[in-house]
Length: 254
Image (cartoon, rainbow, N blue to C red; front, side):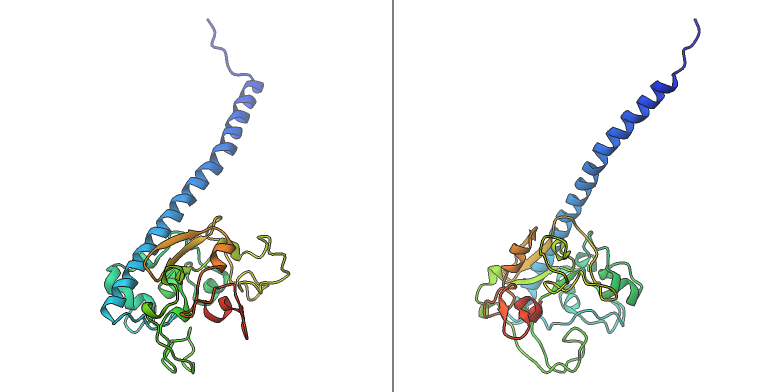
């Protein structure tokens, strides 16, 4: 009996079925992969939260000195300074400060040549300025501004609401995308998704980002409302509250 070969139509039908299955399954796989990364990011955030609590216990309840975005010297090399450096003895691993979602950003990649915030500055997570101790004139204490004239000491016991006081967040939150229904023509709400050449935004997650709080817990924020209702200073001002000079307390403290 002669072997019967597939006809062209039969082959095309098989190919079409495979293409349909791929179109259905690939997004499911992508969503599952992102969900796993979101979970790992939140796990890292919790460990940073615990490290912050341990630091406070050793330093009379005082939050570390705020420093951020030092790229020279390189992260975790002699001379590099930042909140992650103060917490490193408690995390025992610099990898804890690296989010698996960290895909860097346009400005970071163009100015430092690094593909992630962690590689560029030592942390995928941004520490809230007003909920960390600030020292006037101290090199790099104020996001790289050694001429800062403000000073304050932050302690957990002095915070109005430690359980809602956001001391850290993922650098990129999904809702920083100004196209997420804010109906704003510019990036004035969060300052990330701006027009070139000042665009800082790159999507890390479709869902949101991690936040950790002064009392040591962490959670994943999936909406701007959750983010804006977190507290960003010792007096209890919320991130989205109006600020007398800076628009909102987000702009004053974040």
